[in-house]
Length: 221
Image: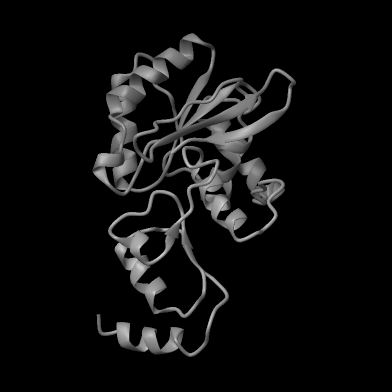
């Protein structure tokens, strides 16, 4: 709280054309309230009274992917949004190292696989490890290889529990990759379906191709 006064003075030194509260919580609303702007907007599911400060934008993607919800706010400002692009580039050296790490664990990135990101900061947002284990076994039955990624002690413990509970342990890359290498894992998926745990932040990725053969990387929170 001791920094609130200096922050207030810094923010109020100038006026703004618009304020966007894309977090929609009390702490972000407290900052949005300080700014002088004729327009204050937030995304559709604002909480903790933040909608009293910024107007929620209930756009056409209110029930869709979080990125599209954010872009609905941009569209409400009149911004043009034609295509969503995530310009994450993985250097060839990192890509080669990732494929080697994958191979060392018994996998081949050229085969169809699904990525499990099994961690989350909040325990209530972590899908049960036994559910991941059941999903892993089912994926194997569909000739899809489950791959666990992540980092840190919690992810390592969860990965160990999943591997122990599964009939056939998934490939475990937890703690084996850096961020750039981790980025390549979902980007290289080639399966024809995708899965996600909608009630939390644990997710799984793979490559989805529609009936026209067009691919799109999908990630569901």
